[in-house]
Length: 498
Image 1 (tube, rainbow, N blue to C red):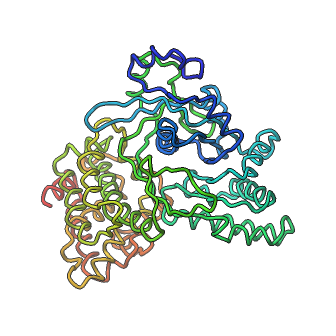
Image 2 (cartoon, helix red, strand yellow; image 1 turned 60 degrees about the vertical axis):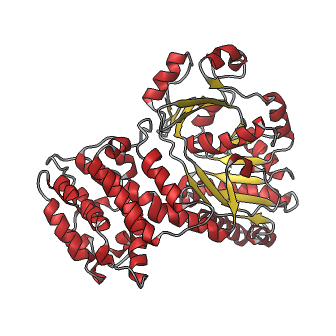
């Protein structure tokens, strides 16, 4: 079974193995998209293939949309050259459900793949053509927060936006769908900065800056995205191979990107977008995407990042490394760790949760605790989540501490789990697990700097914790718990004591 246009014509073979194939006329959709593109996405990674591409797939299936997605890759061209084009842009989505079942879908909504390479005349001209199209409604991104700080990449993007300006200052919505705070603002900031420099250097007229700064013409909505899509998993690969699917072996590019003709992902997903679309937009609400106002997007992000998911993830990451766990779902089989994150979310976090109304915090948290974290088919690791922990603590725990301090009815003295997690982080920085064995800490820009400090001095770092822990009794309590955690088996004992 070959994942190509020709290969999926053998419908009986695919469907007998439980694969859902596109039922719409993909050739017609491709032609429509070529003539009247509506949505181009930058970042050909797993989250895009599992989420945005699947949302469009649903709308193509029910006839809501008649154009597909164009994907562009500006960092790792090999993804397009070695995966997208040989597979005719088809992709297999393996949705790993908490009940143990796997839903297998061949996604056909991506109908064109482009390379953002200004040195390749044919590639860049096709992108310019797309950006000049009056039909284009949305340009979206999943290139990580670092992408907006990468000048070479953003210069190329701004060059394409300039093409749209030259074509008549056509309206467009430019949407960051990256998992970072105020993502739309960060994207706009990068675009406007480059545009101003180009005006100063005489590369374009002042009207271009006015264009990108006018939200009635060029909008940069905020969004909140949440879906776990780990790198291609070997268990899923073997399952697809047993079905007879060819070409599942992941390609590792020269830039160390893992890409395969399948993507594995959890079933739970959330995408909340500020409804700013000057040129209209597809009816993505029919695929479960929530459109709302700016304040509500901000609230959904705070709910997720400060209370209902990310703090739990970081707690499991820290103690998973210390206790020798290799998967998050194995940690959730540990009753002590399960109780730790349940208490963290339901008792400490829920008291100060921001309710966005469009999503229920209680239901969101219940899904995290009962479906998402315990899912035995999700190969996510504490070591992956432990990356850049020093950058995550200010939001994931600092905001809750601030909320307790600002409250007239709450006190940080009542916090039991957060001090234990922060003490666990001090133990993590030592690089010695609970059995007394050294372990390799995950990459973090401040790792070496913090490891060189005493625990007392680490806790003085407001940039790491987002607050002054010495302002109340927190620092003293964290240091005491940390001292109890030192020595073989004492991390486990402190957790059980809690």
